[in-house]
Image (tube, rainbow, N blue to C red; front, side):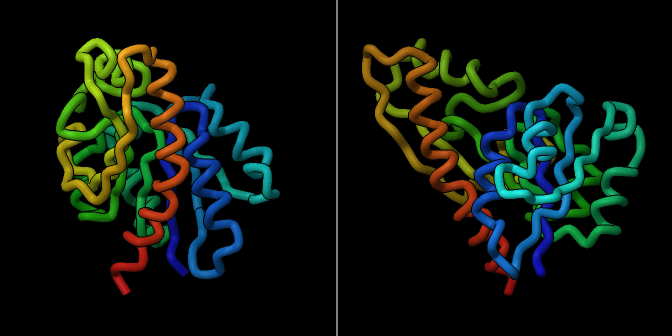
Length: 195
């Protein structure tokens, strides 16, 4: 059984798609939802069982616990987590966590890296920057996580067109379709490549 911990800070739409994707998979278990935001929508989605009556525990933590202790790293090691999936998690991964899970932490970024990545480039900020730059395409990048924002090795990219009349909201919608379509499948591929 492969065990996944999902880190999320926001609404949880990607976390829900991932949970749905693996709900009937007897070889993969979503073991834990981890969040730094007590008001995150992902918590309510998890409480509702992600629409599938899935009972996935939620762990909340604060900045001090995450950066000043190794409690989160130790908890994940004790739970034999095989893969950490970032699904709208905004904090930089601490070094001890990255070292404990080398090439075992993946993230999805709402742009075609290396463009529009780095500190502060997430969510609507990315889509606004894409539109402001007059880009003709955007998309998603799924990548391994290291100790710097959005600089880990790329695993997969998919693109979508951006038209001159698109608003940041239009781009966000196109990108979210790609996220929901590809992220769960790529996570499964990453999990299975170890076998």
